[in-house]
Image 1 (cartoon, rainbow, N blue to C red):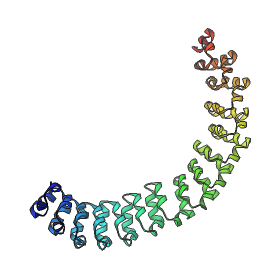
Image 2 (tube, rainbow, N blue to C red):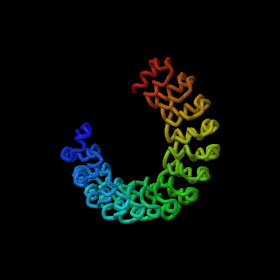
Image 3 (cartoon, helix red, strand yellow):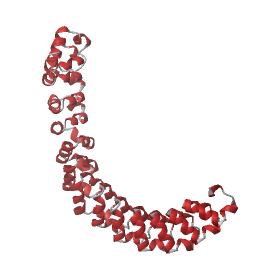
Image 4 (cartoon, rainbow, N blue to C red):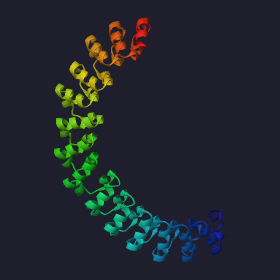
Length: 347
């Protein structure tokens, strides 16, 4: 291998020629003089375009035919071309056709060439990152990138993200596109409501003021339980709001204050939507015999969340087992061994 060869062999044309025919990157181990040799450089880039990195002569990196050969082998070799050739539209287009990532190495002028940028974006939305500021504000180009991934919106210009019509179209496709909207648009009630109707989690990107808007919050909660964590604390302090909220999503009970988690009306409403929400009820309510009796008559397995004392109350356990025999496993040890209850649980 040329890497371990003597200086004499590294300076031997035939030895280096043989090495780069097998692996173009072996050019890096050739002597300085041979790395400036055009015929050897051409052999190397034909085998591996990235060998252009090891061509030491600026004249050769400005040799259009040699660089064209390199980019046809590997588009990323454009990175090592001279500044002049990185401004050559035909050569850059050839490189982009092979690898969109080379847009990063094109001249500033070509990164503002709409046709070249579109060609790169047609391969990957991420190419938008390397487009000129002006093209990152081009609605059609950004839309082409958005059609591939909603994440492309994060690469759009600030001006475009402040364009209400453009953002509205993006939000109607994917509500969480609100994340990339301007501060003013994230406070635009109508636009935020449309985002939330598409995806409740868009509430996380709305202005803090809108986190306290009842209509918006209720719609968000209806769409996504995860939106609950973004609801204003002031709203959760309102018993009527919490009741409306649990009607939309029983999980809202988890975020209510202690007083509301001890409110039978609210808790039973949540329980009616999802029996597992009972685990968020206050300890006082879970020790309320009438409350638990009402719960187990509807869903015997609600016995799981009752206080220890009530799980040892034979009348409560009897109601639970009558409704669902499997609930016996949540009763006290003594009642789990009760022959009558065991027999009932098997029916």
